Length: 380
Image 1 (tube, rainbow, N blue to C red):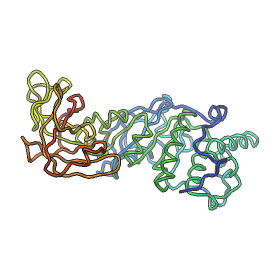
Image 2 (image 1 turned 90 degrees about the horizontal axis):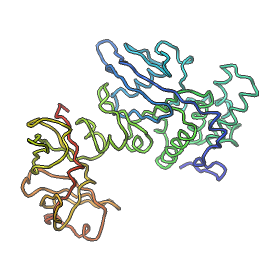
Image 3 (image 1 turned 90 degrees about the vertical axis):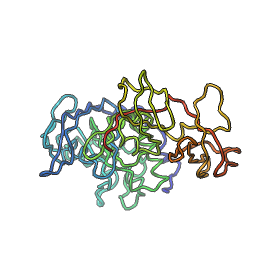
Image 4 (image 1 turned 135 degrees about the horizontal axis):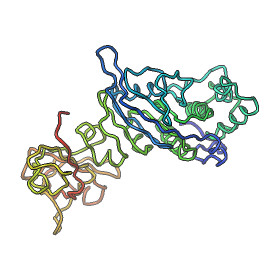
């Protein structure tokens, strides 16, 4: 982990005047944007908007199209079709240096022969900003990222976290309407990565610049974002808040990609609710008709365990198959007595009676039907 002297506390909020000076908001829109390489489709026609000052993360596995979107927005790759607009202006055919966007790259891309201040001020020099104004903005940008005393150091004299902050300052100093971040934290160790996640969110909240962040790290996406765009095989699977993405998945891919989930086949019942392998459950079906085949998903932490079932509670009598202690949480796999071929994963807070559970013990798996998400059964 990088050592952080007291005067370099990256968790300190930027000064209001600095935040106001460096901040800028842009409304980003992708309108049926696609990218193909011959017969290979890197990105199918895609449309979504990022609102002014919003922190949106594009999340997906390798090859899902997330980096392709970022490169298209930045102008490093040309679209095959569609339009990209910032504040209503079509920037689709503009070169990168004429777009109101800056990019923080995964490898930082700092000039090794320039100081931190020289790296930060490079874009201002290219834009021929007056020297006094450029110096002021460089000082503000270094202050924003907690490196105001490190301006004369070279990249080789800085830690990985410090280099990343220089790259962020360099991208913000030119006051972009949209800041693009291409997995910028992936090279950092776990502790510094967590600190930088908190730092990025705080900076974005203070300066209110529109952030488009690309990552394959699910926890990172959930903790940082106002909304998440989940990608798979060149298409958008779902766009929603982190809570909705996690607890209200709309596709099989989203339900299984983010964390653990209990997924069951179901059929919509007459009058509402769903017939599941564990029995009929009175959960919301979002207007789906009788007989429609659906998936039903419930997160393991939304299932409880009890020795007895309380009146008015929904519960299934089960036997314990496996137990895994993981500190504050314990994972328990149970099998419903009425459906022994089915297993449910349960995550509960570790406690005395949970610790005393053994394989084969009889328990009730309890849940609130409102915690079950239902979505159409399409091919995974």
